[in-house]
Amino acid sequence: MKSIINLILFLCIGYINAQESFIIKDVTLFDGEKLSNKTSVLVENGKVSKVSDKIQKNTTVIDGTGKFLMPGMTNAHVHAWGVLALVQAAQAGVLNLLDMHGVEPYQSKMKSMRDSTDYARFYVAGYAATAPEGHGTQYGFPTPTLTKPEDAVKFVQDRVDAKVDHIKIIVEPWKPTLSHETVKAIIEEGHKKEKKVVVHVSKMEDGYQVINNNADGLVHIWSDKPMPEEKLKELAKDRSFFVIPTLLVNILVQKLYRKKTEEQVAEIEKFLKNEVKRLYEAGVPILTGTDPPNANINHGSDLYKELILLSESGIPNLDVLKGATSHPADCFKLDKLGYIKEGYIADMLLLDKNPIKDINNIETITAIWKAGKQVKQKNKQ
Image 1 (cartoon, rainbow, N blue to C red):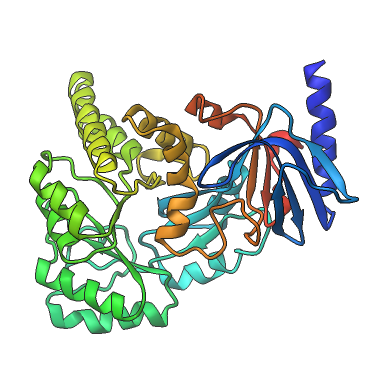
Image 2 (cartoon, one colour):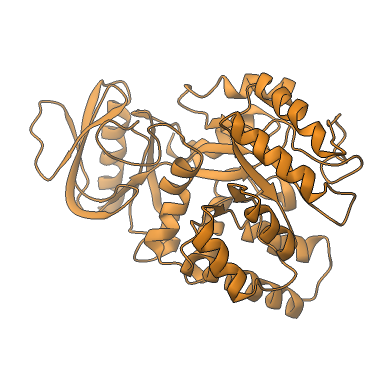
């Protein structure tokens, strides 16, 4: 009987793909901010036009009883080299990808797919800022580099001319790396151009320094030693910033590339989760990102694993979901995305089970809409 009900639901959802409007009725709604029970959502012309416990309109109705509705998700740290990554992401309900280092001439085509239903939207940093022979130069494509603070003006202007969405800086001392004076100059120049500026770090002291220099966020968490409590409190009080911990990739690289023992990996994982919890408790927004294709991570469903790791770190599941929906939209200023609220783009995921009760239920997505149109899922054809 359950399989028949699901089939009927799917056929109804498929029918509305070509419709101008539809209602999801009596669903449990996470709107990107709060949870509501037995709520209905009206979608018209690709946008959410009404959210209420009572909606009257002559249009297609989907019964959401017992189901869970949430905004489409964002992976806030990826590297994508082709449009297939955008398809893979969209089919998993990951409707926005934020690229953190790539080949600018190839990215315009991928960005042009933003309005296509079956492709995730693609936002880019273009080339990341790094030192000669530094991290980011080893991937086989020409990468511009900086050697001194005075280089920041040209570097940032070149990224603006390439129509990047944000600026990425690499501070990685296992290879030649940028000085903090140069990093500060890039941050300041990026802000002059009204760009969010994020920084790759692996050391606690580097993370502390770049946030003190007004970076908007970190795209990895440090893995060497805990941040002293007084430093964490100082940053949380005096600076506004976010962190994309990328726990999944940090854990996997220990196993795959650094050949750590299971016991060593377990200790590193415990450390990383504890630092994430401390950041969260200090009031720092925690965003979800996985850094694919590093460590063979995919651009779609592997984001679920990151959500599970964040939940295991002690972040309440409601805030874990914010980290995949409203937080990236707010922190990166993704216009009218990340929420299911009136006037917002109708990016929505319908789940069979509630991931706030159990974060593993994020894997029960049964339907995906991007701007009010259903995304084709291979397992739903």
